[in-house]
Image (cartoon, rainbow, N blue to C red):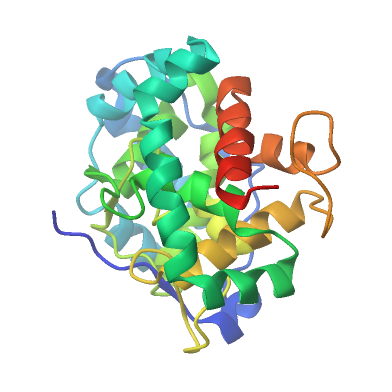
Amino acid sequence: MHMAKTILAGTALAAALTVAPLSAAAAAQCGNNASGFGTWVQQFKMEASANGVSPAVLDRAFANVSYNRGTIRADRGQKSFKLSFDQFMQKRGGQAIISRGRTVKKNNAALFANIERRYGVPAGPLIAIWGMETGFGGFLGKEHTISAVATLAYDCRRSDYFTDQLYAALQLVSAGTLHPNAKGAAHGEIGQTQFLPRNVVRYGVDGDGNGRIDLVGSRADALASTANFLRGHGWQPGGGYQPGQVNYAAIQGWNAASVYQQAIAYIGQQIDGR
């Protein structure tokens, strides 16, 4: 699978990626099928331009955008989150993630130690997320990222939320850090631990010290950014992360599905031995 790299210049991130106003975006008419998508794109582009997004950026970003039926199917069919914990673990290969994750932790001990020193997050939950999201970077997704995000911004179900994600994706395109034809997961997630565009802007960090942030090609950047996300959601160094403990709320910030949260905590504990 061809995957265009997503690379952010760490030192220029705050200056380059300013948040576009969203007030006018609500005027674009949402829809629940493909028939109105083309009209919505034209409306959105006009509104985004009025909100300060460069017409050249809009033209580049939307050059190959289309209504993504695969994204809609995925958004409507998240049945695995309705499974019991045992069913979910089986479906996601939880025991295999634990087994491989222990080896991954051992083989990358210095990386995980550095991340824990910097962000306070131990290896276990990071490895659990990494394993469940992409099989440790083995499959990052096949959907056209901007098409996926634009489709969900147009779709009436969560239009406001994904309109903000679309503005974030445009910020990344404007900065030259997201290729207009990049591919990723069905909801527009990017990289080895699957960050939505707004989270790339907020939490993406340079984990390998090379002066840029690459959530696709650099496991260090992806894992450090994930730790930074958890810290940004209240992670307390040294605290427990099982249900009822101080850091479980940060895990809840990663995914809204309770069974997913439980799986992160359980797999992480089995890997960390804590």
